[in-house]
Image (tube, rainbow, N blue to C red; front, side):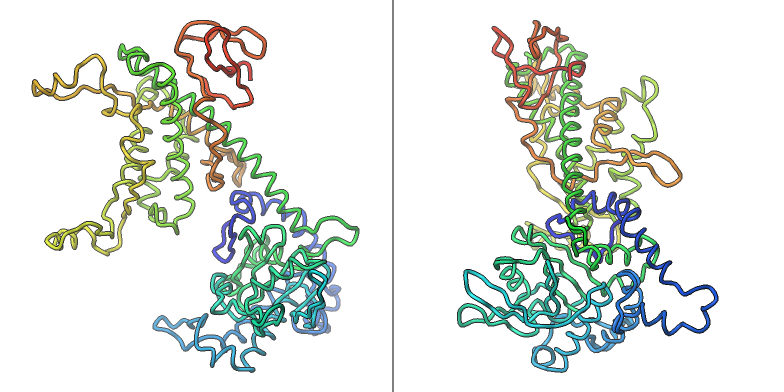
Length: 578
């Protein structure tokens, strides 16, 4: 579930939870209760012809009665909303679409009593549609032993709603110089009154008996400020303007989700006591994020071992001993660091692919999805096992990733012209054409630099058996070791960074971890905490003796730290001992 009407600033919900898990949590709970309530509110079968007005009375916001459910209220709000919206829009633009007016001269907006009253009335309609019995009043609060009077659009236990200027987008609704301002400034401490909804929300959260939630109402926008995380810059917002235009009324669709996140049934604590439903969902999101982070951490650890051992195996196959490359402890640190860098490249691109609005990857282009995308590789890995020596020992996965890494770093048909001289104008016009097509903007990141990973590749690790200086003096080219990662290894690596999800129809599919948005903490693996078993001997593991195969590379968390007696080398339990 992803809707561009929702703004999940600062990951108020963990991104993967909001996308994949929240719809499943809402369906058997709140949405099911709403369905039952709506069924019970329907008139008897024999009364359909004569009580239509009564039914409308109980489901249309703005009447004496509140809607049966918040989702029913939102569905009924659409007509009245767009009728009121016309007073906040400019004439039709060249496409025939009403242009929304988020910012303009105060003389036409805040300074006009009619405009303020229109916004206030629309905000009240929105509140009633969501199940709140909106009654503007002056709220008495105390802070530091002093009493204050704060005009509010609505107040009840644990929740306050504030009237701000009309906006169509959440960012505009928080603009301190634009529509993020309150309809009426509130005088508090000092000579300057509080003018913005965001500042007044922060003030209310610091009072003696603070609300859990403050709703900033902007006509076409609602911003949900939660006292628990508002100070961290995290909040939930919705563009009602966008959601109502789309009018997705499917069960569990966009309007149902908006109603479930902002409606009265979600923000009010239950009569029997306990947490409100939204707080319970946020708690589930946090637990889910921890679980996904643990899975990702374990996947990273497994993948570091797979990549490092593959590099060592590739060296042996070419007749090179690890100690010929570098001192064993230093080689172990380099293997750890570069294996992690390789994995972080993948995770970074997963994040960029999930957020095409960042402009790092052209993920919206079908050519990218079919030719370059990590999603394509994920489906390939999920659906096929490498069969036969040719498939297992080939480099298709490595070359596909390497090509993507190079395009991201160096760019392809970029719009930018940094560093171009005036004489290069003709070339620039050719390379920087604005026609529609696949393009990569150069990232120029240290993570993707060629020198960031020297131990993995076809032409980055010099062969220590040949003197490069002498070869160059004789006019010969340098010789390199081929340490590309084979399909069999990368197949396992990508699997370790995947989660399983059951699709509609019962089909199982592995998806690359969308939790890459959670940006895994680096503390899970550190250089000193990763062991390379590049020597013969026996290692003490949790009080037991365990024989290690020669050349085995192991990665482990810090809590498993042990030292091999007499060798001074850190060790960790292998897969059989975990």
